[in-house]
Length: 384
Ligand SMILES: *Cc1c(COP(=O)(O)O)cnc(C)c1O
Image 1: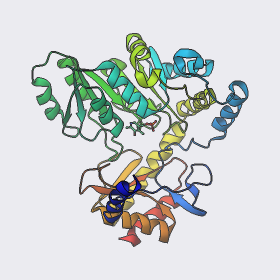
Image 2: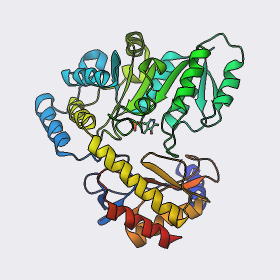
Image 3: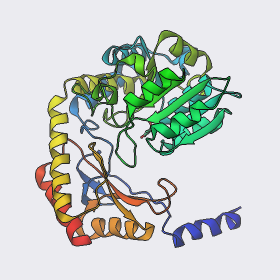
Image 4: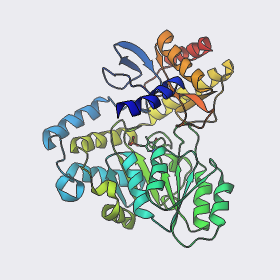
């Protein structure tokens, strides 16, 4: 087996596509202890800086004291604790929806929803730049999968205009994870309604960050829940915790409980993690200061990058990619930033992004400060 595997690994190395892990010695934060040295971090998804917040750490400890560590079973056997249940109710409340259902990860939530709602004879319509978990979900569903041009309402509508008898599910990221731009949600909601298709939105990167109260992309666009009947969110990004959920109507959630295989056939997340997430939801709720700080940092970066003539992308979110194009060059730049400037920014390469679309994916956290953003800008200037 090893002999069969080696050539493909070598080929990846030759093409600068080899992926490697760094070892983190402490918590996620703007300053990291990484492989034994201090670095300035611009690549986490901990947008609000909650991953190491004392309230959340305390809630985790208290949760462990009350519930122990392992849930011990799936939700449908006897792993569904009071902590999980309370978190589901609080998430539903926060988002103004009848119900919410916890999943162990966002990847599993997406697989579960799409496969529970569609099958042979149905159609799943996906934005080309959707997250890998949504693409995999569409393939696993056995429905006919059609990918429309990125954020292109006309391209979607052309596909919807073809006659079809089965169910049609439109699926999109709300904030695209490698580009940072927003899906045209009001137009998508309108199209879904006109064509009687169902709309599912993955708000992994909008939740907690966008909208006046952190309710995410729907709040940003002032869309009411009815416009997007299936809302998925993750808890490992702005929430600084772990896990994911789907929020929607009573029949939707009951259908997922009965039929989503990635919900049914897996151990429930540790209840203490649900307790920690309840504390983070309270902080997200009252987190206007953090959101304002984040916006100020993003503005500062964009102004500075523009002055330097860097190739910014049209993003207003904490995801601020710099398009490089060539894969080797993006990797070299990322290495230079780390080795010479102690700044960590990840290079994103194909197949995560299209061929020729390699980039530095810079992300901001409310715990960054102005000086650190200036350090990043100086380092980018000197590394060109
Ligand atoms: C991170 C992410 C996921 C997966 O969530 P996990 O909880 O990390 O598995 C799903 N969708 C999008 C858009 C994401 O960015």
